[in-house]
Length: 442
Image (cartoon, rainbow, N blue to C red):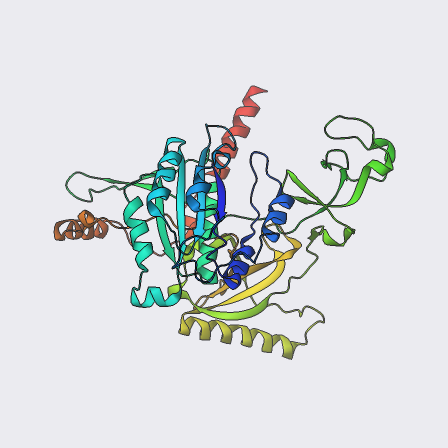
């Protein structure tokens, strides 16, 4: 896990762009001592009046604090302990006095602090390769520093959201080590090699379906595990001290396991409800299945078949037949077009609970048979994780020898339509052995 320090150069970031940056407030699983309210309060109070229109071409005004001075401030490097990696995210549109800044960055390197410069440049600069001279000079002066990286971005909302995803990866617990895997083949792929070594990365991260209401003690702001109206049982989770009614708030919501927010009313909370008998899915768009990224498909599949009963009223034989025909017609048409339907619902079919956050699903048609449509949950924007760097080395070009050898090896592997009946996991046989051993034990 890394600790991030965001440093914004308010002198050369125009107010409209700064307003867009202020929407990057994110919630994540906090570590160390992180206060979600304080973070939002700080972002909300970033001043919008520090912009100097000519700053990117002129010299710093008298009395202005330069980036070099900010990086020389040891307060930036004093947070947390030395055993945690630290990174400064410097967001700006230009940088002056690169020589002085270079000396400050070398000091940061001695403190084992990494620095990422996010250079926000207008769209025209990307379209025509028009890189400002001062930006080129800045990059040339610090490109040899191992602790510094300069990245140029067009400040579009989608680009900024991608940056947030990458910063979230920096905040992840470093205990979540890279998962390594080896794929073993029965026949050699080339020469005597029968395996491929890979790293596995999660493509999505599950998030909660809502923020449940809770009771919390006012003394420490900690949730009381069991909501009860019995005042005798109110105990402080930290000190185990008995609490009076004035010491407990009923208008709090739990954010994850460690964070509680006090609210003026109890209307902000959301207690998840179990699904009754039917679930409503709103069809919102079509999608080409050939271009669908399977990494966004989450959870288990559900088989969907036409029902003889409507959600609200029983169908007559004629209506039931029409419902079935429409269903088959939908399947055939979607299959012919190689398209699926994207649907939204407030129900999470994995937990079978209705929350306040939307879930997205994909209806995938099949050509025939009872498995006509499969409904699988799709990851939302908050759940998608950035892909690992996959820049292909020029030395990794596939030779004709390897390509021919791989094709020969694959031709020796049986090609079949996957049938789950032929791929037993061994659950029942293992359970039967355990029962047998238990009976012998007496």
